[in-house]
Image (cartoon, rainbow, N blue to C red; front, side, top):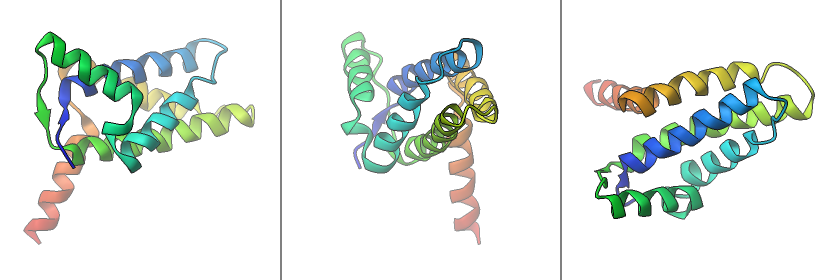
Length: 135
């Protein structure tokens, strides 16, 4: 898979942060569908087929912020976002409150990514791969 732009993913994290905040602090929980769908497309199909990633990648290229990185770790993060977003959608559909747990996790970890560039899922992915190759 071709590399992805880490700065485009930071903009994606900003979108995740915003949607998570909307989910947690407003009566609108339907935007969790965007997290679930985006995570599905980017994590299981390809980031290069996701409309938001394509938009953010084009924007970062035009601004000279394009920074290519390995897609594997970012796709792992997308799979986690897909699961969290799906749990948020299910919670919304059931009118239950358990969706606040994944929404809070996404809010915290996307904030870290946006403000510092630290992707916790990418770190976990790299750690997992290095621990498997050491065995």
